[in-house]
Amino acid sequence: MSILTVNKTNFDSVKNSSKPVLLDFYADWCGPCRMVSPLVDEIAEENPMYLVGKINVDQEPELAQEFRVLSIPTLIAMKDGNVVNRATGARPKSEILAMLK
View: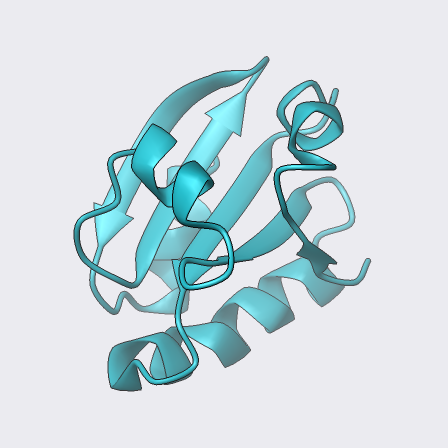
């Protein structure tokens, strides 16, 4: 499955997904975000049972504020519309996948 670009227009459908959701809050200028991004892409491709979305904090400040994202990258795992896990900063792929368990 490919990565979904999440914005305030499609966020409700993402939040209400029947699949576990992984959200990657990032910015194009952020070095650690560029390290995490390929790992998030791999997770999306290898795990169709998850809905994986990316949120550009510069383009979607309201969503960043709603999730109290103060530093990037911030990864948020959601199940049934609720945040079940969150991590800030670059993480290895195994830790990102563990957030979704």
